[in-house]
Structure formats: structure tokens, C-alpha cells
Picture (cartoon, rainbow, N blue to C red):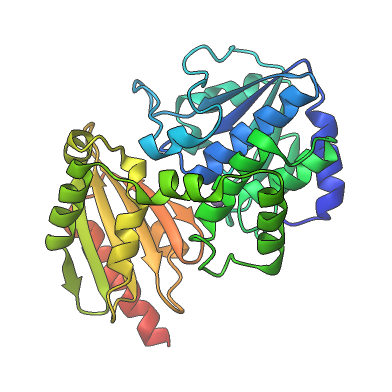
Length: 330
Ligand SMILES: [Mn+2]
């Protein structure tokens, strides 16, 4: 739902006026969910609120923040298991459905107020105040507007965390989220003091030697299906050996997408606890959020994901079928 953004934002700012706020990022965090949660945490602290950031994790598992995201100011200072059972106010950032919060989802019904900020569609936002703006390049763009509403300047740690979300969700300012307003915000954030070179290198470029070798194996193990699906697999164990988490692989699926006749790319990550985490990317007119929806997931037009207990063969067959159906329609 998109309503008048300014109206929603002032309601969100009012709802966040509380002694203590827990800002939540979703499981397997990317730079937008974590950057948005950290940026809001920093901004709330600047106005005297006792704010903390918490990251969702699958039940029974420790929360895992990808090494690349450790570059975000505050990433080393996350609340893990000590989220209070009845928090005053919870803010949920960049999360389409509550299940994506893992164990943290149980806290929402016990909070006095929930402020839900997101740009995914479709989603199932649940909060006393909901700001969902699918036109926003990143949830970080919504947070940047909200930060202004709180009367906090877009400088320092707030600017760096917002920039991380913005540069990631725009594919480093290359995909369709690269709107004039995204670029204007980027300029404002850089004026606020973002170390563009250092942050980009930490978020996207620098990799361990084991990571380089794993990338080679995943690419060498790629398959191409009739209909334009290019896919590969990696196990959580292999990722862990290279010092990576399941959320560290966006760059890999984007390489699969770059094959010249690919219409869709799929990376299937086999969880140590069983089940698959799938990342999808679409090319051209191929819309992948609905393909992810077949497996209980969702996301954006050209980037989506899901968690499933289905087998690799069944998922691949399902995606090929979805691509075929689409082509027949036309
Ligand atoms: Mn996002």
C-alpha cells in the first residue's frame, strides 16, 4: 500500500517517540535491512532514545551477519538473544513478511507499537504504523526521509548506513531502482560524509582467497536449461569454509544472470539444517517475485528469494515451468 508518504512518515516519527526502541532486520540480512535498522538506531539515539538493533535468525540458530556487513557502523554492537519479551516500540525494516524475522517475530504481538517500514510488494506488513513505498529504491530511502522527520541530519553513521542500503538495492546504481530520487539521495548522503570508496570495497569487492576459489567452483558447476534458466548450487558448509554466510552470495547469482541468453538466474543454497534458500534474478521482462511465490517467497520484480523444503530438481523444474508458461502467454 502506498499512501501519502509524508503523512505516514510523520505518524512513524511520532510512534517512534518512546524511551526504548528495538530496530529489527530480517534473517540472512542484506545491506538494506541491516543498514536501515542501524541508520534508524543511530538517528533515534541522536534524539535521546535508547535504541538497539536486532537481526532475525532461524529458530534455534545464532544470528549471522555476513562479513561484508561488518563494515556498517554499529554492526558489531547488535542485540542477539536479549531482546526484551515485551518491548515498548519495535521498528521492522525492509521485511516483507513477519516470518522473515525468524525468532524475533514472536516479539511483535507483545510490543506496545510496531512501526513497519518497507519497499517490498506484495508483502504482509503488520504494525500500528505501516509505511510501504514500492517506489522507494531501498528501505534506506524511506529511513532517510524518516530521519529528516525526526530532525536528525543525514551525516556520519546515519548517512553511511543509509548509503549501504541504497547502493546495494540499486545494484551499485545500475538497476531500475536507480531513480533520480535515489541518485539525489546518494548525493546528499555523500555530502553527509560517506567514505564511498572504502564502503564500496568492503561491501562488494574485497574477498578472501577461499571465497575466490569457491566462486570458481560455483560458476564451474552452473547449468543452463532450455528457456533461459542459468542456475547453480552451493552448500552452507562450503560457504562456511570460505568464511561466508548464506546472505553473502548476491554477487554470485548476479554473475549467473549475466550469461548472454539468460532470462533468469537461480542460486540454490543448501542449508546445514536442511532445506534450500533460493535467490532469483530476472532479466528483461522476466518478473521473478511471482516465481519465488511458487516456493513461498517473494521480493522484487527482478530480484527475489524463497526458503523451501523442496528438492533441487523440483525447484529447477518449477522455475523452468514458470518461465515456459510466461513465454506462452507472451
Ligand atoms: Mn530493500
